[in-house]
Image 1 (tube, rainbow, N blue to C red):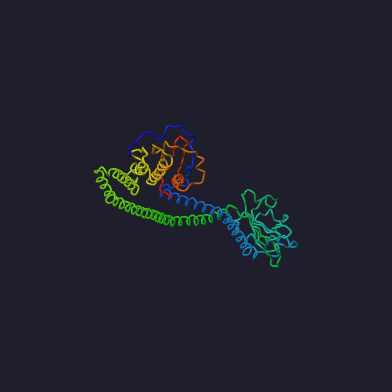
Image 2: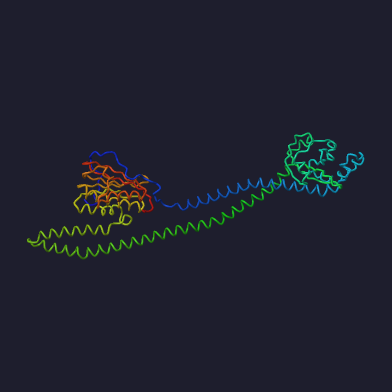
Length: 460
């Protein structure tokens, strides 16, 4: 029956519901490493992460740039007040006892000094306030002489001689002539007359100018941020490629070393099998042939022939067929050799072509070797059926026997010395991330079914 094919997969007895001993766990699977997808994924992640960092940096720079633009506008207003307005001030402009002619002349002097600012259009409105809230001068003559309450910020600027700026709300009566120009930035600075009296100079600038300057600064920040990310990515991709090449090279080197170790083991097994075949086996076979020709020693010859058969079975065990070299059928036949040597009929049903990785086929051979020998040794089986099929992405291996069967609850009991078969079957499933299912009952035989990923890359 060696190598016989059959469509039978087990006995015809009624078996209970399958018991899942090991559930499939994708986390334990070692599939082929998709290096190209790893590279593309890392590059895309770097691009997305870099773009996110640059975008957040640009948004933050918007606020920073706007703050810088407001500060620049404040500094410009302060410089205008110190360099242009203050030198043009006279005590008359703030003296209520001065004649109307003298005050008009003082205002005309300010008109002449600030004419360039008005004509350039860099400011929408300018005002000069006294500490009591009276408008002493403005480029809008209708405001001159009117009195409005000063805000706490204005009074603080008068006391501390500091400059500041804020977005004007334009809702007060003093701002009625500034409406219609859009949002305005109100900047103010304390100035002093020749006699030292503190006055408040205000300038209203279009907020669009502030936003334009902020946009320029933001553009500079964005160019710097995206440029930096781009340079990092340009440097990162070659480094990543180098690392992936090194990792892949290291993996291949480990595989070559493992292959050499296995080749050395196989070579040693072949040497031992060859020495057994050319030496003791031939000697014992020749002796059995000689003894069989003499009636008085035929019984001894029969014993020697059995010893030769046992030795040949051991030779198959010492030098098993490799599934990737000799084919899965030959490897499974070798895995069943011990059971056949013990007198148990084994039937192997394997497709002519099995599309599975060497690691998956090796797992199948390990599983069949243990399951078949357990059935032959402990279940008193007279027939064992081995069936292999590729089911989609999985390699499915079934081993069914017509033995005594057992209660599944016995699997939870402590293992007895020498009974490691069930543990080894579990380990095969766990090492590949596969699943192990059992069907058995007393007197109904036993069916083991192993499912492993057909493309698993390695065994632990």
